[in-house]
Amino acid sequence: MNRWRWLAGIALALGAAALISLVNSCSTLSRTVMAPPEIEGATFVGDRVCMDCHSNISRAFPASPHARLHLEQAGLTGQQGCEACHGPASKHVMVGGGRGKFIVNPGKDPAACFQCHLDTHAEFNLPQHHPVIEGKMNCVQCHDPHGISINAKMLLIRDNNLCLRCHAQTVSQGMGSIVQPGHIFIGKQDHTALLAHGACWSSGCHNAVHGSNINPYWFY
Image (cartoon, rainbow, N blue to C red):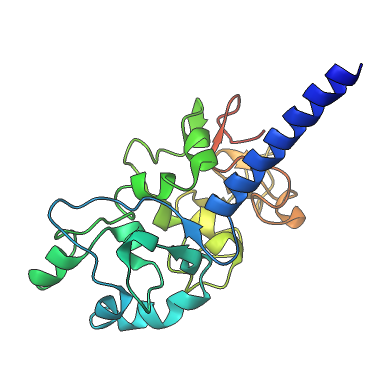
């Protein structure tokens, strides 16, 4: 009995240590330690250099949850984490900047986002999902990675209008006794009574927004 208690105690201690290590490395409030994207031949320049061209983003970014990102290996002061997602920027600066020039753009390639958001990456690999990994849409169509938006989950829009930018909402003209005029349709589904329950995801309907294992309408 004592032997089993000893083994159980060891297993519990190891489990707790692993959990603490995971939390400290990935989700501490003060910083997140991660491996940034690589750009061959480039070195880190620090956020103060980024501010020279991207001043609007740089001023707003410290209030973003992504501002917790920190690159210990860069060894730079005044750093908020731009290069944690965009990669070392020396070559980008050398050529005078420009979209996609020696810099990683997570808006076009979600790989940089998936380095930290492992659970979301897994959801996008479920059988039913928004076509992000296929390159037909990207993370920034729904989320503001710089945190300039004040909405939860860094959503660009806090309500149904976020979904309606792609999923058209129409008002029926009436179809005899089957559909009354004035009913609100999203796709082929009558949503007239459903819209009163909240946003598409917060209403308890389409809450598997990244991907579902069983349902094409992203229900769990």
